[in-house]
Structures are given as structure tokens and as C-alpha cells.
Image (tube, rainbow, N blue to C red; front, side):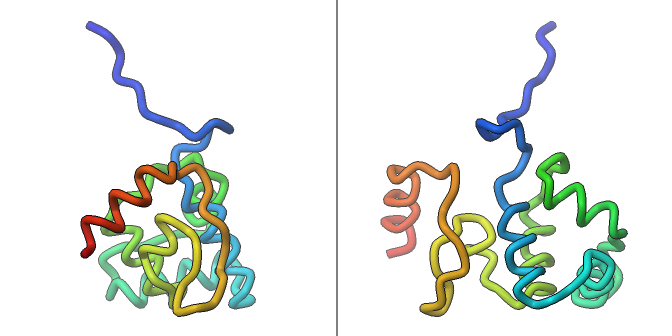
Length: 113
């Protein structure tokens, strides 16, 4: 039976949101430990995160679920869509889209109309 494989970015990351998590965390002047505490607080203790987990997300070696992306966005005071796709949020440039094809972006834009 073939071994299950997971899709990765060209540079081997399991997620592409890690760079934006780092970007937003540093813009807010938060340490990894402070972000971990904010995640625990914003999730009302449903997701207990350590500094190591934040580090693993940021360097792309940890897979992040949709529910976790929502909690990360809450803790980082940003739009989960921005964490996922990049671009702009509320008219303020927070980062560039990385690793997402323009075709996928167009399809997502059409689906939201």
C-alpha cells in the first residue's frame, strides 16, 4: 500500500501561513510566548499552545487546521483570510501572497460573490 504523502511548498513547508504569522507577530511586537498565551486566551483554553508550537507553525513544519487558523487570526488581530491568502487586510498591506496561484485566487473571489 502506498504511503500517504502531504503537499508541501516549493521550499518544503507544510504550511504557507507561518511567514504571515511571523510577520504579524513581529508587527505587534509579540514574543512567541506572548502569542502562545494570547492563543490560549482567545480560544478560551480550547487550544493550549507552547512557544515551541508557535515556532513550528512559523517555520512551516507543523500542519495547521482551519480551526487553528481562526484562533491564530483572533490572537493576532487579523483576518483569517489574510493569514491564508496574504495580500491586504482592511486596506493596509500586511504581506504578499505566496505560493497561491492566481487561478485559485480568482476562483475564491468568484465563490465569495
